[in-house]
Amino acid sequence: MPIPTPSKNEEQKKFHDRCMSDDVMLNEYPDKDRRNAVCFSRWHRKKEKDKKVAKELSKAAGKGRGQGGPPQGDSKDGKGAPRKCVCPKCGHEMDHRRDAPCTETKCPKCGAVMQGSEKKEKSAISASIRAPIIKADEERRIAYLCVMEPDTVDAQGDITDPIDIEKALHLYMAQYRKVGLLHESILDDSFPVEAYIAPQDLTFDWNGIKTEIKKGSAIVGVYVGEDAVWKRIKSGELSGASITGSAVRVLVE
Image (cartoon, rainbow, N blue to C red; front, side, top):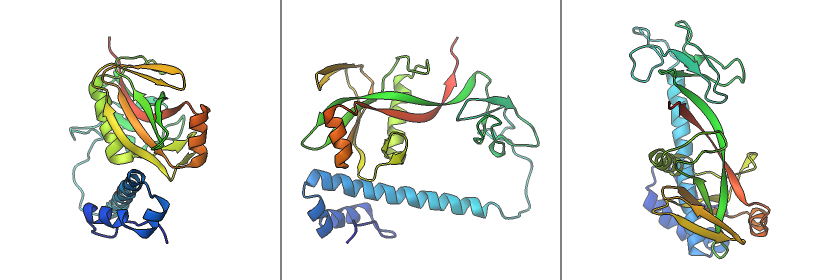
């Protein structure tokens, strides 16, 4: 029998109780903490899928003909069109055309859909950040990573302040909660189970490597269910992760 999946209109507590007592779950995940993490992940993945379906249905409904209204710009405040169209993938900028909204324009360099930018000093970027494994709990199979550090220049030459780091961590845990391997595939049995902002400067010692963590850094604990991946982490072959995402770069004079 398959692992339980939330049914339509089922409340989270009812699903969690059902999942935790399910025979398949008890057999495959006898450890209560691991079983709890899997049930929690199944609930959030189903909700993410429901949101995507609702979004697609909303898009489809919006394609019908209507009476229409005055032309609308791409700006978030609805006051008009942005000055620039910016590619969220490669950062390419181009002047906005009144007859072509940014969101209906593809980047001439990489083909991604452009976004509107109100201010010239801002540009959208796509970046990867090195996140070292700072600790591993072998009994619970949880690897801890420092995914973002405040006021530190990263590989792209950017600096992120503590407030934005906290927002990014909350957004990841609330909406994404996925873990991939080498940017090639999403792991089915690995997912974040802990996340917190370092309350003070911390020092971690794992595999003979000391790592100093600044106050305000984002730390994520990832449960690793795949045996082969966990083996590579224990051996030191996998010593970190690459965090990929998009952001808006603001030039500071």
